[in-house]
Image 1 (tube, rainbow over the protein chains, first blue to last red):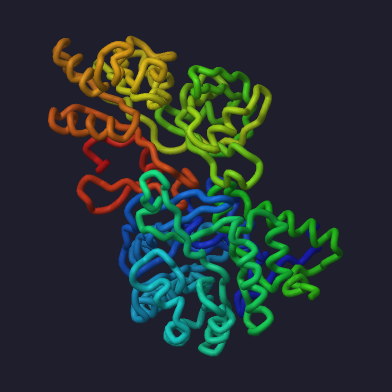
Image 2 (cartoon, chains in turn yellow, blue; image 1 turned 180 degrees about the vertical axis):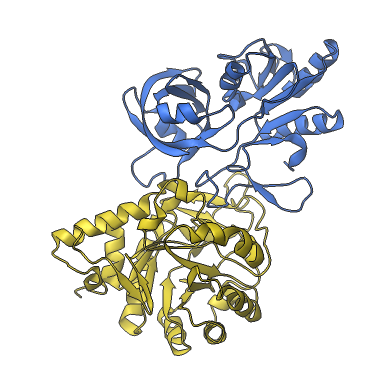
Length: 305
Length: 251
């Protein structure tokens, strides 16, 4: 098993294996590290940060749906200043690749956050969240608009030399157009997909089950949608893709890589089995062994259509 | 906090839809304290997807127990488990009750299934006087198993005091001129709200264990917020709770 090269490259970012934990499902690493060995993973993506702290949406924030869940957390986070002061010291000790996710309400705020954080050595790359469906300003207003996504990529590029990954929304007619503009404006990779907009009602009270009315759908329910989006990007744009959406085990991870993902992120599964990421690393390794794949990167986009 | 595969040793049906299960779970048992909870995976498939949170009903040596009623798919599946079945349990989670302090009487106030965490608390409070005020809508829903010095209230008067537990509590404190006590409460939200109002007005020392839908149960999903009483922000029921001082939060 040990002779298989599990490393992958996301542009200039080298990961020891393709398994990342998704933003918003690992906090800032401290809780989940009590339940799984983060150092064995490809890396983690921290909870979306904004310049100032955000308290998030009022309850009810989550509801379970068939093979999935809706969430409208509202980007609750500690803000850049507290993150640097209180979270970075712990993250530094984790011995894993740290990707910092940024969410903002204006292009200026994205730029300001990255400008400050790029000086933190511990942060190896940025994932720019232009696709949060649960906040009034920013989020999907940017994520659904090609020109905005292009402009954010271009502007953030001016303030950091670290890899920039743009996290794309699936709630658009043609996701590959967004990947193309990210590439054109100097982005290094895309993450696909963020959650799908969904809603759920209580049939007796006739009220939405989530206070925000709509939320982001995640979990196994969205996996086929995510695979289709990854494939669409892979077939149309030459840019590294980080596949996300309902990955629960190594088979799901392999499927994403075959469809074109260079790496994958585990999200909702962390809530149920916090050790999923490491189980996927082991599962992928055995799979490669049995399939006589020496470098896992051979798997990327290896679909036969 | 850890994940332990735990075998069901005993299962009892306490009411039409109320069950108790006892499991062999030495690591969780060793690390737990009253008022904490566990997040249980009730199925091996992705339906239902999420774990289900249950307060620790009791801990005895290497065993832990849970009390639950069937109110959805998750609890229905759990009720169908048998002795010998293995459950994937994440716990112990959250902060339990704060039992420190020089109060002499512990008053437990429980509504319906809210009685679940109190056998464990009662066992740990062996140096205090413990009074249990337990209520429900009707006689068959009152749970008093493993509680001490119980006084019951039912909405329909079918058992004990006719009325709710907060009325019975007020009555009890007045009649017995009780002072130097601490209230530990768990139950439906309207009950907790009424109790919170009373304890703030009367300046009672009161801890509330609150319930909330959760995904992870340990602070990473941010899905279970409760607003702080100053309105400045949220605490997480799973990580900061599930037990809060009555004056600390808005219900």
